[in-house]
Image (cartoon, rainbow, N blue to C red):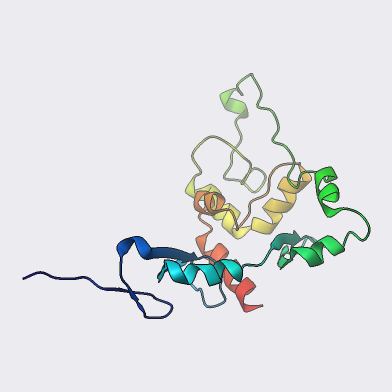
Amino acid sequence: MGQRVVRFSDLTNNIIEHDEDVVRVVIEQHPALTDGPVEIEVSCDEVEPIRKGALSVVSLKLYQGDGSTPEAVTMEIESFNQLAGERDMADVIRRAEPAYPPRKQARAVSVPTAEKLDYATLEHAGKPHRGKTTDAEKEIVRNHLDKINERLARDGMRTISLDDPEMVARYGLESLAKDSSSSYLDS
């Protein structure tokens, strides 16, 4: 006796006859997402309407002069391009400054042990370094993220972003990142 495995589309509940007709769809952003991306399976016939319904969008962040948390915005590319008036938006973007300052060159001479920085202090926590991020540094960053980002930006260094999975993992900011993304989804 044999067995047959039958697969169904998660969208329509229709049978997907052949394994090669299964398309894995990862949903990365949706107001109903609470714990990160999810995946569904659909038939290859159901993919074309997804492609046809795709929008051309631009994603950006608005940084207010008061230092408040940046606001993430997604808008249709045509509407965004119209903001430049008669100018060509592609030209405006080509001429724009990079959003993040370039990294400072590493010094060739090593720092003597007495002068090494203590990254577990508010003065140095969050600065880029090659060493292990200690629990003490993680705690300072978690408790004072806004102050640390102000200092880093003022000193021309990269800031710590809750949208960057590597930084979130390095500094143990998972709960802050989750709170930040859920407050974004609630708005």
